[in-house]
Image (tube, rainbow, N blue to C red):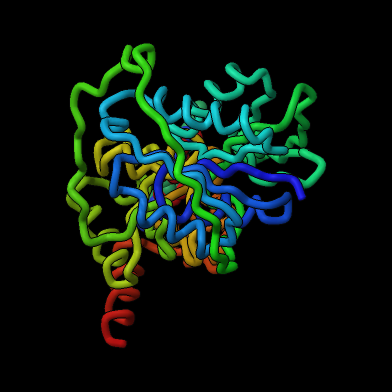
Length: 313
Ligand code: FAD
């Protein structure tokens, strides 16, 4: 059976999705490059999601440089084992490693892929999700970056063979060093991309202060807070919480859109949510054509009632 590489830059929902996507394509080998002692979670996840093998390179100082030392490891493993496909995360690091790998091995690259079949045919959503494009790499094997929330991750426990990979940081890989690392304080709310519930506010929320209501509803439901671009541009909520074409793509079990009209660019980031609830005072708002449940009303009346009911449980 063909060997398929999955590059796991960190354990989490996207890694689980990539491993799930790779399983029907062949024997899955997770490729993990980390600082010594930092790989336990990623290795455990590879086993939980059915990897047959884990190539583990623990390289002291790898985090002090841009992705090149990691990409060098993946490239060497690629040359040695000739996998039939390589899946990487559609994160900034994953895309950079993918581009480096594609150029250094002469293979074709497809980014933001939501599905890949055994024939190497990849699906990408384009034009803010309005169209679906099907493409195939014609030069070499497919190197693809996988978009978060493209499929439901399914565990399939395995006992992967662990292969220790000897690697060091080359002089050329040291050309771009990390100058400063900024650790975002981790709040109590779940990560936006991984949350099972997302409560988003739009321009209709009206101000940064009034976003507290959105936060309260999110907290009551154990969810994350999202925002439309109109809300982030207006300074109601930080840009990193923007959902949509130029923000984050989410696919929670429950997505609540309050005071959001439902522009195509917003839908691109949330339309695959399992259940969509919209609260909007305009009965003709386009969000209602997408919503499973719609409440026509003032969010400042509807959400406090919702909050009261949830808190009473
Ligand atoms: P509006 O469209 O102004 O809608 C506000 C809604 O709130 C209205 O429907 C109104 O009826 C309702 N409302 C007002 N008051 C209340 C109230 N008290 N109670 C209930 N309802 C109320 N947008 C994104 O969200 N994400 C993106 O990633 C994104 N990327 C973009 C990329 C490009 C290239 C472009 C051109 C645009 C992008 N946009 C994006 C912007 C997008 O086109 C819309 O402008 C934006 O989504 C609108 O945000 P909104 O729904 O909050 O605001």
